[in-house]
Length: 88
Image (cartoon, rainbow, N blue to C red):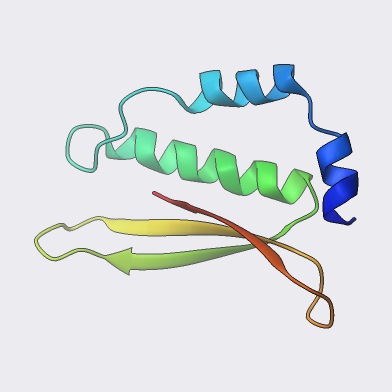
């Protein structure tokens, strides 16, 4: 699916529902489970849209938790790639 096809499928109500689903406090100390729930949700939604999804895990000094960047890639290795990345 190319970018123009995706843009034509944009549904403002769906965007609103996504925002409602992920809004709220997501803090690595106070609510680490919310941070992970949001990362899982975004990963799942990227997959539903047919994107290749990559998790880039990393640690931050003085934190025990593992953090993730969620990357969704449109296209294959031979074509132009468009990347959507969410850092959580």
